Image 1 (cartoon, rainbow, N blue to C red):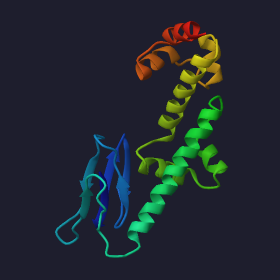
Image 2 (image 1 turned 180 degrees about the vertical axis):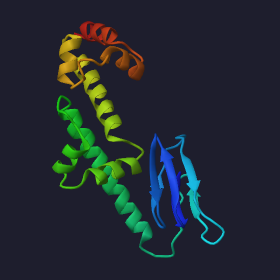
Image 3 (image 1 turned 90 degrees about the horizontal axis):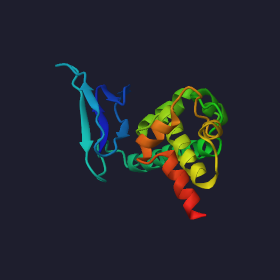
Image 4 (image 1 turned 90 degrees about the vertical axis):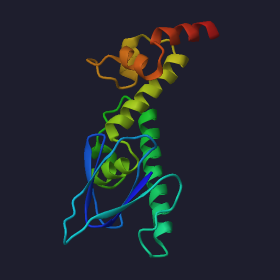
Amino acid sequence: MSITADSGELSLTRRGYVRTLRVGQRIAVPAFEQVDLLLTGSLFRPTACVLALGDEEVTASAHPCIGWIDHTARMELHQIRALISGTVFQNPQETWSANRVASMMHTTPRKIRAALFAQGDALTHLCRTQRLMRALFDAFQLDLSVADLKRRVGWGADKDLEATFQDWFGVSLDTVARLRASSW
């Protein structure tokens, strides 16, 4: 689904983050994701938006280049998310923050957060996901203790990797170790 502000201002709350959409701004919402949409119009200043399901193009503007601009913006947002994901996966032990990512990409933390928000993600969620994926990858490839694995993937010493891993993947680290041992 996509939401495009057509007139006035509207507020979109998603995963605990509130974002104001101004006229012409568009945001994509993944299927089945919960969002709260607040139209803050009045009698003399109405607010409207266009909701589109599926791959339909939103035609809130008559400008012929809007589709091209939206496609380019979507590609850039996708590339930013993919670049951050790959970087965190390759270097999970590093301390990742919006400031650090922004300095690497020569932009501002606000733009990084906005780009990820537009894709339905947040930096902390993205880092956690990539660290868990790296933990799965390393658990299958290497014979490491849980403490070593936590250190290798940048998991906090006070955080429970085993429980989170079990919740995320539906298998325990012990099961992965047994599968690794039986495959060699």
